[in-house]
Amino acid sequence: MQDSARVRLLDLILNATHDAIVAVDAAGRIFVFNPSAEKILGMKAKDAIGAHVRDVIATTRLDEVLATGVAELNQRQTVGETEIVTNRVPVRDESGKVVGAVAVFRDLTEVKKLAEEITNLREVQSFLTAIIGATQDAISVADANGNGLIINQAYTRLTGLTEKDVIGKPATVDIAEGPSMHMQVLRTRQPVKNVPMRVGPMRRQVVVSVDPVFVGDELKGSVGVIRDVSEIIRLTEELDRMKKIVRQLEAKYTFDEVVSVNPLVSQAVEQARRVASTTATVLLRGESGTGKELFAHAIHSASPRRNKPFVRVNCAALSESLLESELFGYVEGAFTGARRGGRKGLFEEAEGGSLFLDEVGVMTLPLQASLLRVLQEKEIVRVGDSKPTPVDVRVIAATNVPLEQLVAEGKFREDLYYRLNVIPIFIPPLRQRTDDLPLLCDRLIKKLNQEYGRSVESVSPEVMEVFKAYRWPGNVRELENVLGRAMMNMKFQDTVIMLEHLPPMAIDGDRFGKPGSRDGGPPWLSPGFSTTSLKDAVSNAERHAILSALKKTQNNKTKAARLLGISVRSLYNKLERYGIEEEEDPVS
Image 1 (cartoon, rainbow, N blue to C red):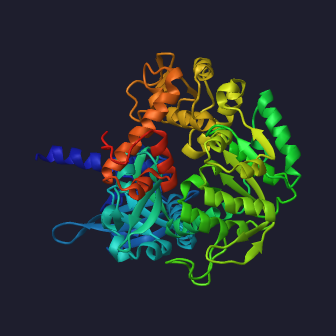
Image 2 (cartoon, rainbow, N blue to C red):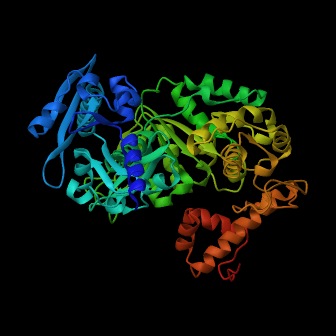
């Protein structure tokens, strides 16, 4: 490089330097005076260069450095009203002779400001470290490259990993199951909330929320909050178990839960309210899914027995022997597997309260005799015992089959029929109360919103017209099912249920609903299905299911009944009803 080029480069460097630089020759005359020196000293370079340094800077000591040849470092100096910190050093030639001196200095107020900022940053860092360490949530911080930067003690307690295991290591080091949320946030620059994962050697169940950390527009890293949910899950499961027990012993609904403007329903509610204050046996009648259990709960809640147990049992869900022992209890040794010391039955559990017997029409004749004894004598006899036990229980029964027909066929005791039918309350099917559909849809949508985490507001007028034209063989239960399935077909941001959201529904041959729905549907929702053939279709489907179960179990009635979820006695009744002979080959 030529000398002129070097001089030019040196000038550029000196002019670009942030620190002020003043250089003098052996005579003390200034030959370097850069822009930073102009700014601090308030003088132009053209006025300073060539002048003696003491004429420009009265308090200078560069002439002393020239005389002594000794450097003066980190010296504080006042120049006019400005305080500076300066380094003064001699400049020597090849022989060691002092041929000049240079002062490099900076405004001390700027240095103080930087020092204060550093102090403040350290204080903030101390506060943040204390806050992060004190919080009970586990915290993990990663840098922009996804490596561990900070963890707190709660993190170590939760995962079992220490700073040595995590700091400077990839953010995946603590993950036992699931992707790294730190890496996802750093990749997408978007936060994530409440993601379930397992972390640490013990595979602890946690939920993780991670946010990106920006300084200006630059992504500097991410911070994650990790919450242990294993204990919450255990407590929730325990609470669910307790709720199942409590649900059997208390009523959940009142008459306020009955939403209707239909006069038939209003008549049923008024009748139920009047009978609630008495001890009379109530028989709730109506098709499956009309709300008989809701009425049973409401009657108990409105009765003087409201603070006593409310026990419910589905008679169709238990076999004959199990239903008998569940209702009346048993003594020790009554049968193989009987609990030591015996067990109370549901009648005794409901002492002073109400017992709801759902689907009472499927009871066998021996069980009907035992129930009649309770209603007449107010006492029960445990299985395997001969001593009666008095009970004070109000019976609320329900049936979806005509008991009069069963009495005529000899399948239901006439005397028990009259004992149960003291106060019959008929709950109309949904097809007879279509004016209630808007109210029911509103109530069910609110319930399903809570269950599914949605924000659906209503159904469209076109959907309501379809609902009013449909016969609803499954009644309110089916309506809830259709609304729930429609919600699953909606986009998350949709708020109104439209025709295209509905599962397959057919009305007089015209098909409505989402084509190709994966959840299919019962026969009465098939395209082209005629509403007048509902009874035959249900019978055919039931007969088909029975034959299929018999084929799978090689005609073993007990196993077939268990497979179908009904009692053996109910199976035999259905075999007789559909004319299925024992030797008939059960083919599908």
